[in-house]
Image 1 (cartoon, rainbow, N blue to C red):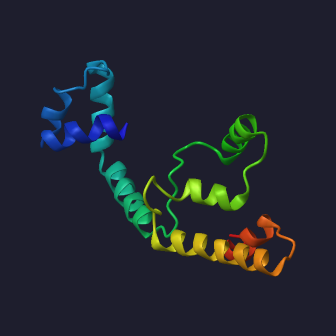
Image 2 (image 1 turned 90 degrees about the vertical axis):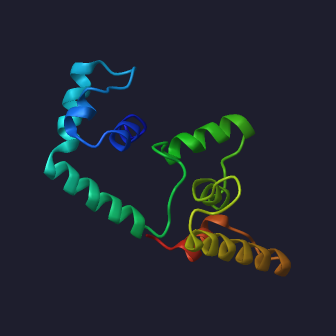
Length: 138
């Protein structure tokens, strides 16, 4: 709904103007109900609190609403193996070019360092254990 709401709310300052300018994809009657809901002071308050909480988040995910289990199953079908937790962490906490937060980048780097350390020592490598050690049981 964000993609419908924000362009109209930014373009029109009053509730009446917002109600009279629905997106093409939404019937006017439904749009008016949505605008009423979004204009309600309790909804605005909740929305502002949620925005503050999102900004405090130290590990932002890029997976949207896709569950981890769905991703794992898709990877198994595509590659024939389950993705390891370090790969999965990177997938869910980075964009094409960067990590979503410095903390996500640091945790991934910590996992890769432990992985390289175990490899150089010829030790058994359990990526789930490495993940648990660096990320913790949060």
